[in-house]
Picture 1 (tube, one colour):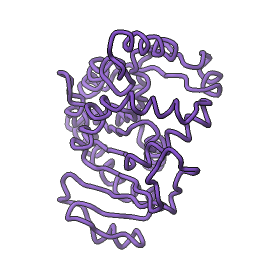
Picture 2 (cartoon, rainbow, N blue to C red):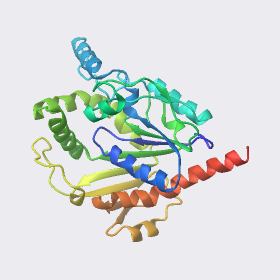
Picture 3 (cartoon, rainbow, N blue to C red):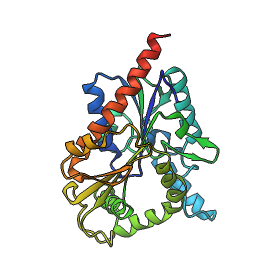
Picture 4 (spheres, rainbow, N blue to C red):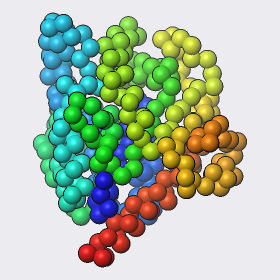
Length: 294
């Protein structure tokens, strides 16, 4: 971790809502006049879309039917850790963009499913913000979690996650429910090994839970809305958290454990603003004091 070059890492599985969390952070950065460098986890995938399909077929032919974007083999985790370490040391690093759709293709002047060239992060910046799958990984000799000053986990309960993935892939990629189900099953070992353990290393977790029946996610006709959900917020270290203030500001919230608050799903943005703004201020103020004392 670094006083002069702090890192905020938001980790969540695909479709968990990390992008909306990034939007909240961007609002905070803009309002508080904080300059941030951004890294998207997709930038550190090892293969583009065509290569990934080829490698998955090759792995299956070789007896590994579980090759996935969740695992180490499909990602540049050593390079991601080095980027975190470089930024923590001197505020520098490199990233690139993975082109998801036609809108991004036009923006980056690249083909859908490919990467843009590597480029340096902007400088100087107050903080590095990472959003992706592996922001708190500790596995296979890689320890990305140790470099992040604030680690946030964003994850829905698993049935809700599956519903979100099924609906997204059917809508955006034209997959059938059966095809998405195969993808879920293929990813499961890597999900258990690489994704789940990260949420024990995070400082705060935001977990969305539906309040409607999601017993069979493979036939759900609609994704539960924010109004049909609650969010469990878990603090790894609750010391210093003003729970009475938080409960008073978020209507219908309550504490379920000494380190956990439950809020209505439609109050997530408000809760994140209340919780994260002072934490970000602390990181940036500490950085600025260190620079002034240099």
